[in-house]
Length: 340
Ligand SMILES: Cc1cc2nc3c(=O)[nH]c(=O)nc-3n(C[C@H](O)[C@H](O)[C@H](O)COP(=O)(O)OP(=O)(O)OC[C@H]3O[C@@H](n4cnc5c(N)ncnc54)[C@H](O)[C@@H]3O)c2cc1C
Image (cartoon, rainbow, N blue to C red):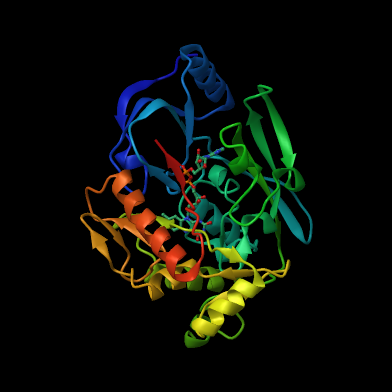
């Protein structure tokens, strides 16, 4: 099998932060056979590999001396269905939002709150994508993966994927397993989750009293478009920091000092703080250093106004982390994958 491996490829068009670094080698694959051939080639060259989807959760800090494998496996298939559920297998290279819209058009629900999240289906389990009170794991059944250690395809159940907040087995053992396809079990009867963010308020404003999953999807899209910059217009990688989890005592102390602190009690007794609120209160919103900046409407999003490098973005992030540590005694963890 011949592989079209290119050399010294600019990754600017392949990451939504629009950072201009080069990959020493680059190949697009659209089948398991091509993937195996690309992995074998990298092994023979003794060179590392980066698995690339839509590039919307990456910070590329330097040129990459490795083989980038752009996963382009396509296809959506209904495996089986009954009166209540349908099981759908989606190949890794499908666009996430397009798949969500496809599922809603089939009369299936569950994914509406995750509308408009950029990227590919294959990367969605990596950080267990979440938004508006929903997470990928809610309707995830299993995934076909290629295990680079055993060199075998393997089906992993939800329990085996060890999903947690913006985390999974795939993130913890980064690069070991290539997600080939994801199987979802989607309900035909909607069980809408409207208690998060401005969803209820937005639907009431639109005078929608009995929303359908498609109404919720449209609401999520409208609210997101209002708050988050479109990477096509202003390069960014979504939320730059995870929401930090602190002890209940720590949250209580902060609440005494900052009565408007945004915090959510967790099942384990700890408290999750809104990282965006902390950064906003610290005065960073709209701050700009050269072409690296904090978005003017959403303090959790770092943006590239044009020629910022990955290092410029990371330097700004480090300043924010130090400030938040000093002010609130809280550690902010970077959410996207940092490379190079
Ligand atoms: C404007 C904006 C808004 C966002 N909003 C949200 C949000 O609301 N919630 C949320 O959770 N995230 C959000 N994100 C982050 C991002 O969209 C998700 O993390 C998405 O799942 C990344 O998909 P991708 O295909 O772009 O992954 P990439 O950036 O290409 O890759 C991300 C990681 O996954 C690995 N990977 C990619 N494909 C595979 C595969 N097939 N098998 C194994 N590993 C793989 C990569 O090596 C890398 O480590 C947002 C990003 C942007 C730019």
